[in-house]
Length: 154
Image 1 (tube, rainbow, N blue to C red):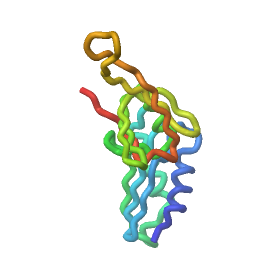
Image 2 (image 1 turned 180 degrees about the horizontal axis):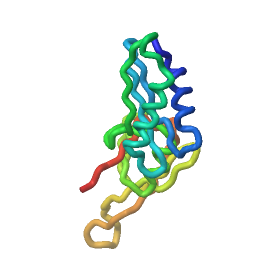
Image 3 (image 1 turned 90 degrees about the vertical axis):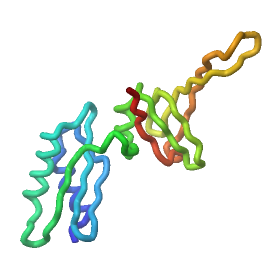
Image 4 (image 1 turned 90 degrees about the horizontal axis):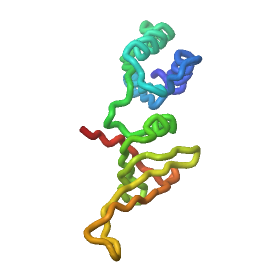
């Protein structure tokens, strides 16, 4: 079986000197290798193909057969890397905390410890007619977050 650690080292060699980063890597018992890459803007098919060719050149199919897939994470995939959060500042996200709370709003800030989300809600305020838009900032530490996904708006 090809080890995930070995593939991780190959990926690091392939992306060295670029703004590409490894989001996720999976290696199954039957050597099905899946690699998800991203960068600060948007990763191209050509960049994924280049990494794929690099890894294939470093592995020997005569020793161990394998299946290799290199791609970007889908838009519906949860964030797994802090750089994915930083890339999405200003976008709508949906966060599920480890306690099961769902927070939806605009990702405002990301630092090494966590994120800040701006939530808008309509609430009745004293002395005003109807409901008024109220903006709340929700700060979450990364260790509180179970899953974060981009909210697609059309």
